[in-house]
Length: 426
Ligand SMILES: [Zn+2]
Image (tube, helix red, strand yellow):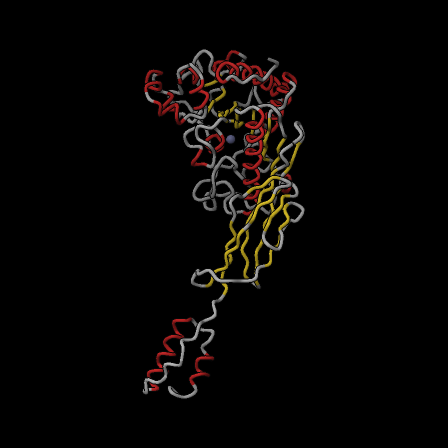
């Protein structure tokens, strides 16, 4: 058998792994015994296509623009090999793909692009953001209307991640086990309505619209104020909505930077804490807020981490004065009927419950952690997280309007005094 029909032997092993084949051939040569069998060349195993990896330089494009995708075919050992690929879009009404992998943005939303060869396929999710010219005051929606962007034309961006009510059965409820260990699912009631009222009252006063991004998905399904896996907990539909959430905020930031060069972001929430006040989260922890002003001003570390870092560097005020002095955002709110911490009269939590800012604030402001979260540390979009109390702020339409009007007044003063931004007529 050993020195029988070695060609048949080799053929019978042709589909086996190369290492096995090699041993077989060595054995055949050895039992030839003459040393004259050098004409038998080691057979080359045909690589078996096992995976396709699709990549690109970006995950989002705007309507009307294009992005080249690259697909890499790999064998079972992960080595690159050639393969004839077919490209397809799961949602051509959102994004088309050419036979060479060039994606073009058609409409706002997300599309899964597939590169395949036979039964092997690789995918890439593309988020398509709106055209460069959104119409201010008009709504644009992501897939299934989960995420809504009301375009603006003022240098102010508002977002409401936790006020949604949609609970589609196709997205499993978030659980700590599925979310990497933690899953908060409580709704911040009426915060989507609050963001809309703020936009309307701002428009009534200045004739321009702040940008507004709202998640209509229940927090049981998606938490846009968390990073993955806690945000979407392994659900692809929720992950697409998360991408759209950030893409819309990025689109708003781009528009603001293009028209004004700098702007202000506020992530709107609702707390259930005992003390009825606005909690302004600048990414300064409660322990840090408990420090004396002199300590906060003695090191640039606190200012460098804060979500209004660039404003503080621009303003002649000390960091602590901008944080809780007579003209701080908190004091301006308090002067307009909405008690806030930190402010001149309420500078320190001193053990009371207090939220210092979440992942949206980390990513979308100018603070020290922005770059690590996909944003720009030291950039020209700064901001704050506002955790609102319920009664008197977001409990009914009249109070939401009242808060919206106060916000317009407060931001006009704050951004003019500290950052040279004019919201009203010059
Ligand atoms: Zn919240």
